[in-house]
Amino acid sequence: MRIGIVCYPTYGGSGALATDLGQALAAMGHCVHIISYEMPFRLTAAGAGPRVFFHEVPRVDYPLITQPYYSLNLAVKLFQVATEARLDVLHAHYAVPHAASAYLARQMLAPRALPIITTLHGTDITLVGNAPAYQPVVRFSINQSDAVTCVSEWLREQTVEHFTPEREIDVIYNFVDTARFVPRPPNLDARRRLAGDGERILMHISNFRPVKRLVDVVEIFVRVVRRLPARLVLVGDGPEREAAAFVAKCNGVADRVVFLGKQAEIESLLPHADLFLFPSDHESFGLAPAEAMACEVPVVGSHSGGLPEVVTDGVTGHLHPVGQVDAMAESALALLLDPARAREMGRAARADIVERFAPEVIVPRYLELYRRILGDAGLHGDAECEPAAGRPREGSRAA
Image (cartoon, rainbow, N blue to C red; front, side):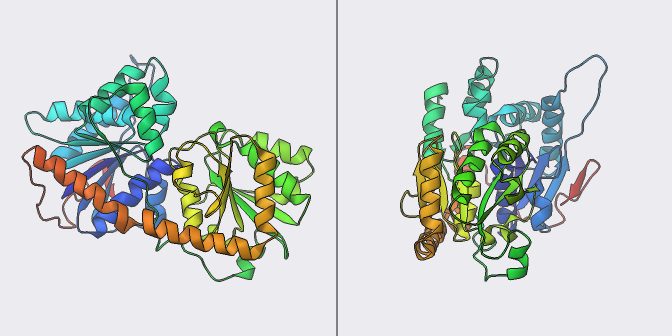
């Protein structure tokens, strides 16, 4: 099957899922064409195989149009890739602008059919989608897709509530590469680069947007470090970094907070964590906590959004209402002061991820969806996929 995947390249769950899905499909023998305005961060880190191809959307300046018009550039690139690579399906991650641009590309391809699958990740529904200016185009994009998926039951409910879609919406959870995210034997030299001897490591990974409540992460840590030696490792970057650094300084813990910036190979960092903090306002799924759990790291976070569908409170982590930093700190301390309980919870966390969110559980569901949509359209998508198919052309390159 020849599959097009359009996604954002930036640091976050949607780009990680789209890229990991593409590489998993390629490993199964399918040709995957990833389209974005930059090389996705996870694509270069993992090293794509010979059946994964990246197509860069050009940025074109035109003097009569003062605002960026990425959506049009994207539609043209999707049309070109669909034509030249003979795509069987096009999988858009995010309704805006990806599904809307995919619809325009399909109209340009007519009368040739190109089924569109749209996966909603959250921001397009909970933030962008609810802005009055975007609500009509999001709803239109959902209804014009041949299939729509959400990454959690919570997000599906939000989508139905806000957009009353005219089609069924499937829930296909994100998945975690359980062969890549694994617990590792202690490496004292590597750990000492993050923390001193005897210090516990608390970790948080995100894009540092306000919804992640990075200041709450620091506030939880402040309460923990009053009771035991610890270090807070923050991975990522974004608008809340300065506020978090300021709160750490005001509380006298700045020397115990490590800002590592964006890191591609987080699987080498997560196993060193004793605890993963994730007190977000809401998460559509929570890929970073799931990856931590795969490394046998228990999670303390907020009982909000789709996170309770990933973390089982009291079994694989502890969840509390949004903003209750005192309660989160007490749960964190309870685990950090009881290493045996923390190890038990970590082992349960990995077992749960392997059972419910491993690639061999989730990826076949996407393939089943592709084949069902192709069958409904009277198409097959069973053509042989040789590595040479989709050889890089001008404006494209192999990953």
